[in-house]
Length: 278
Image 1 (cartoon, rainbow, N blue to C red):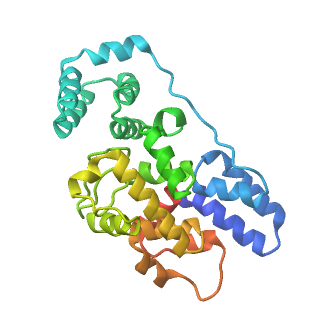
Image 2: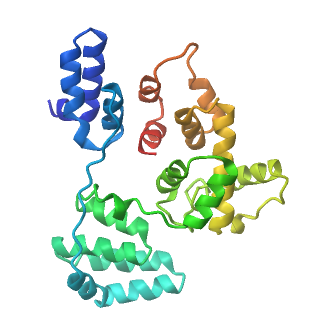
Image 3: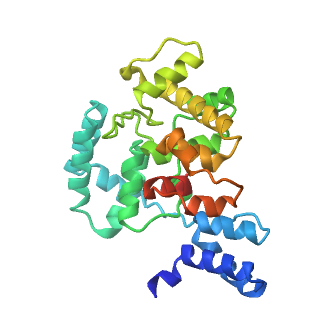
């Protein structure tokens, strides 16, 4: 019964109703999820012939509380460790300090983390407080110069590239995955070398991939390669970025299907959620 209240369930119930010719029920179900601001809400709007309209809920900033948090010992240490390029230790101090705050203070700590450029910490802290809809705060655009240039050179949309980077690394330039993917766009060093060769550039060292200018440019170019490989189909290209293009080729249907149906049938949970979130 709980699932029946989820946007995912309502969306597919609406798709079934539409297929059966019950347009009134379909429209009502689509309309009921428009405010949920997620993948299914965007597709519901499209089915209704409307543009997707976000429903932001800004997190009010209390400067006095933010300033008071910033001078507490845990957060002073966190800031100094961050400035000393000891990020892992900085994050440890941050969450140790956050555990001592009240709920209202933790909400204000989101603003502090964002101000310090700890975007992954801001997003994580907000999620723990059930804060998801302050889009200016939680969907920032750091490294804008590098992203704009890379998007232009690779001919990919800037919002798409930002969505990919946010999902890949939460804007951590020093991110390294368990599989060895590196940097903002989480490139495997082997993939980065292949992309560089196609650009007729010297292959980057793994250390080079921590440089946002290098990482984002190669990531954007790799995304463009996938878009070209899959005939401009963004959802398929994103799946290929996450799961690998050869894997995705096995998932392609023998004849065309609607994009939402194909995405819902991606057999890897991680990749399905990845595509929807981007």
